Image 1 (cartoon, one colour):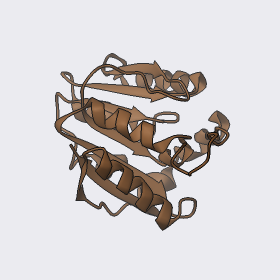
Image 2 (cartoon, rainbow, N blue to C red; image 1 turned 180 degrees about the horizontal axis):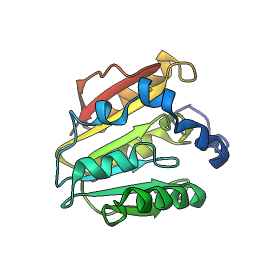
Image 3 (tube, one colour; image 1 turned 45 degrees about the vertical axis):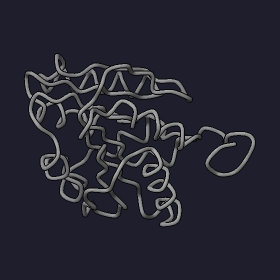
Length: 190
């Protein structure tokens, strides 16, 4: 039984690669500036996971924040998204800090412990939220942080609250509720 109470998981609905090109623009940088959003939480030398990164809107800034001694794992279900990140990483000169990882629909499949995870506008696309949240929680180091942001116009308050309840049951606690434009957002800590 999944987190929606049904026997069969819902059909997988993910953002198509062609739509992600529209997310990386000047207006969004004014309203959802990656540096402003991430800088309070990410430290140099950390291993960060950007799960469902699209074309890398947050991946490249994350790579800059973790510095030369850190690493970002960009984990996505769609190879075209990872290809887009690789192109951007080369252009930004941070390709050596980014590991591209193709996931499956039922597992992220990383084994490395992480200091920080970002799930921006993607948790609602996961067919089994409980499994997804437990998998991420199991990879967070003690004291590790997870920033989840969901679009207010697409994910109801009740749905977001359910995500938080699942996170609490996975051993995570709420440490902050960042103000991110048109989003419900929370910073979780292991």
